[in-house]
Image (cartoon, rainbow, N blue to C red; front, side):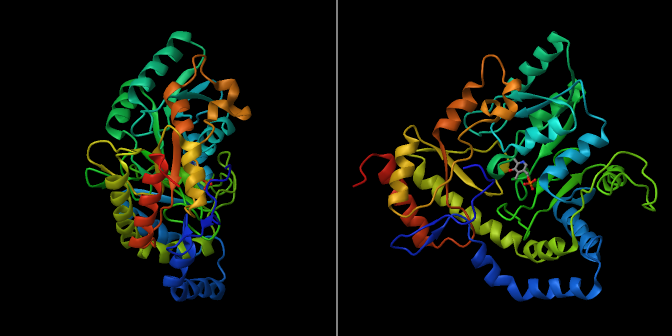
Length: 391
Ligand SMILES: *Cc1c(COP(=O)(O)O)cnc(C)c1O
């Protein structure tokens, strides 16, 4: 599957239709509040840079502990803006995993830099700090590219190894930009994703843990000084009066309607996150005997945007689940270094852990509105399918 997430997959089962992600149940819960917010935007008419943008930025900063938040057009814009602001471009190496969505690599290439793919840890499915060190050393030894930045990804909502990667970034003089597009809601030692790296990009694509009704994203900073430059880049690189271009920028803004929707969804986010975590805990407890669920680094709690696990006979398991009305998805069947757009950057010896994970991974339904009966049904179906006893 190529889209970020397919919002319409669902299966029929004896416990009712199981949605892979259920945005309808969520909308039902908060629809009057969302309608009121949207009506406000229609009334004030500030479709761009309305008061909802500032309100959302303030609430996101308050919630995550980030020094500033810059709302923007998408997760992709949220990755590109900080790279542009740092002057990262041609001749620069940017280290990133290949086991991620294509936007991570697109952002690097769109600013003119070169992606250097790093293998994953087979248990957390996130960037391996040991392999990162190895790849930085190799780039330095080759002497063609200047190591400038590292982009770890919080895959499926599980915080990347921030402590180890920050230490490497500091020692090597690299800018650390976290791709937290799936990471919003993740925590490490009680701190929220957004406050764990100098810069964190997130996406509010509808299927993410916190999703808009269209495209949107945000950049979190631990340094109050970043916002001025980021806000300029998202508005065509203009000065504060928006008269002259003082740097190169583009239209990277979030619109007021999306901020209006996000404000109401943010209000129920903690409750939804708790519900997601209950589902994940049940999956973990019941499925670790037949499959390998994603594990998290010490002190981390996933935001549980998605729930993925590994089995050796993945394709058969997925087919059996489909027959029983359990929808699944595969993130990611093809790692980026094996895709035509990025194959020029494939490491000579491949990325063994990444390739193995891509062959074994699949995702189960994950959303806050799964009923206990549905979770039970899904667990039983996975146990049967993975142990080869399904009828
Ligand atoms: C979704 C996603 C993005 C891109 O976000 P958009 O809002 O679709 O631009 C980037 N990185 C990762 C890891 C993602 O999952």
